[in-house]
Image (cartoon, rainbow, N blue to C red; front, side, top):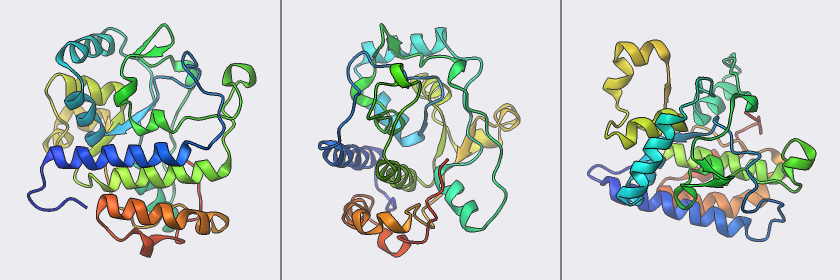
Length: 248
């Protein structure tokens, strides 16, 4: 959880360390993904406000301009717009509440950051992109083949990244980057703005109330939860085992 007076730069450093932890965990995982494999790179990726800040802060000005131009020129008319955040989804599951209906179709198009099947923002890509891994080539099978264990890891990392910015918002990559790269951060005032409120482009982040870890993965997840707990400076262990392992 963010401390009072903790600056944006420090929070971005924490997010970078979370990315690095995930990379270490995934080092020994067999995957078919590689350069030029862009089957999962659709216009439906989401990210948090803090991840958008990392992208804008870590990119040189020339690349910021080119990515802004790409997002503007290839802005997808149809794209996945979340109706609840990852932690909001987990909370609703725990409350046995009705889940909002969401549309997500890969046929809506490719990510606007792609150039010749390569990502122009790869080094600062959000976790939603980092988490797309497959044991088989998606171009051959038509979909990603992801072990259930990795799905659990991905869910918990998404929850931790959202928890790191509980006062922020999440949304589609195109919507978030278009605003961030034009110098317009998403704020609470924006959500009250008439246009954004009608279009409901962004969802409010929530802190973790339960971790989405099924019983069969709790032992494996324990050290990862401890490491994440240190990185986001909160006691996640008390939430472990409360989730039901639901998939978004």
